[in-house]
Length: 151
Image (cartoon, rainbow, N blue to C red; front, side, top):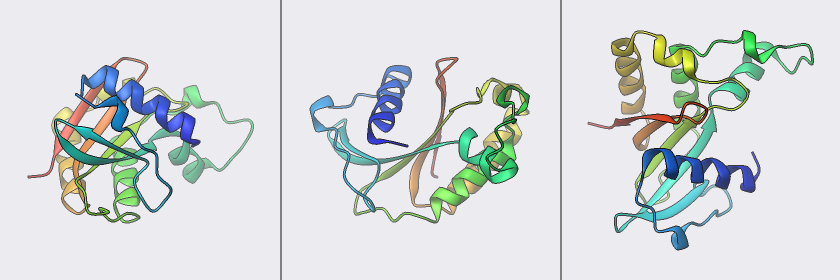
């Protein structure tokens, strides 16, 4: 994802979640730093962004031109797979870290129809083995989000 695309997703995140970000504090440093660094409620935080859909589809089906994204359904296992993959790639760079899982070519609407207790349990279990203090699921199309906090 390009830096412009990352910034666009992060701006949608701010809009949908009503997170109090100091806009002038937003930075997009080079790896291995987080995708976004900024100040939220007086605290310097890092945010990693990853799509649930594009990379998950590519891992499962490859890059076939004939693939129809509308036939793909996001499931709990897709969410957990992304958390585990992102969670082992980054260290905290000395700041509290957040992971934003967002949609790309496939809307996340089906995710809200699954067993929410099972989704909550799966995400919370995956979160515990990562460096992230929060995981956010960001459904841009439906302007919804869900936040999971590390206990």
